Length: 163
Image (cartoon, rainbow, N blue to C red; front, side):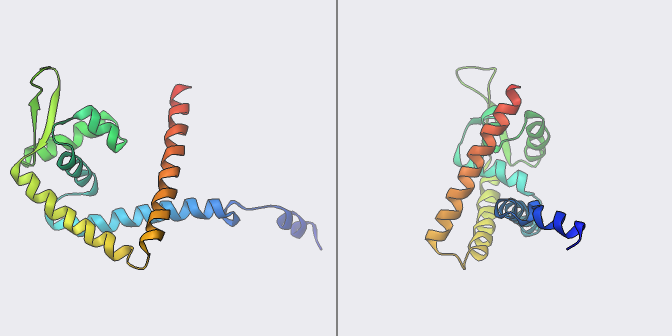
């Protein structure tokens, strides 16, 4: 056995580790889901980040820009780029808070609500098609694993931000 073989045999490459493989699979699946959803929504002239905003406004009528950014895990600068696009299209509106005029509340217009419902149907059909081979129990396990990963990464991000 030559020296090169010995070194390679005892060295563990990251891609050989199951956790690394899981990490890469999650990243690739996420990227492919975004690409597929982008194509599926193209005729509506919205992209996944727009849909994320619209769905959250659909679910949480009157949410503030800060609350929305926190839910979507994005900075205010991202919000300040995306919201005006949706506002110009007449899909969302900002209204002053009745109790505190410094706060702007976001909501869907009727056109925004209709578009969001159409986009959610597309997204739901894509999800159903993508996960059709998985049982409900398997989907639950996947969701629980991803929720644990999210928790770990949010904690890691908070620790890095503190330092």
